[in-house]
Amino acid sequence: MLVVPHLIFGAALGQAVNDLPGATVLAFGLGVASHYFLDSLPHWERLVGYKGSDFDPARPASEWPRGYLIHATIDVILAALLLVYLMWRVPHGQFYQNPVFWGALGAVLPDLLDNVPFWSGKIANWPIFKQERYIHRYFHITDESQQHMPKYLGLVTQIAVFLFGAWIILMS
Ligand SMILES: [Zn+2]
Figure (tube, rainbow, N blue to C red):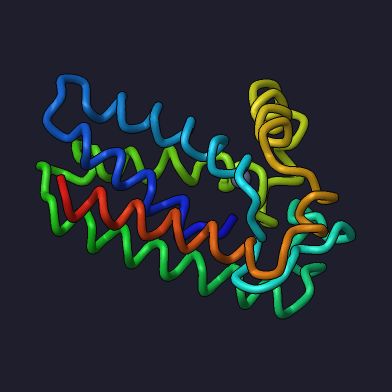
């Protein structure tokens, strides 16, 4: 799944728990859990089109197909801008005191660890990171089912997640 839907969903959870005690820790935990849950839904890894089973995101950036790299960069920049906007919208002291920040960070953390070509390959076998990667893969839908999804379902679920997150943010 793209970073943007993961991020907005996590930010929404953070905002929803904003007023609870221990909101930052709660937001972070819910954010991480939401990542595994959302990865279990039918989705593509890109806006349009299945990722391709030959492609391992843990490979160094220099080996990434150019189109994938551009696509991923745009996704990350949009996600970062969105996060800044959402934190500005619901200020909560410093950024590290803001549950919106921690919810969003938790929600993108598994991809930050496992799918960033600059370090994911290097940390893959470190203790804890290794177990995290196993959990991430365990919940993620298989390559096989991604390839055989009905047309555009992989995009529709991501839009639905985005809209649901936006809805929670606007309502809370
Ligand atoms: Zn993931």
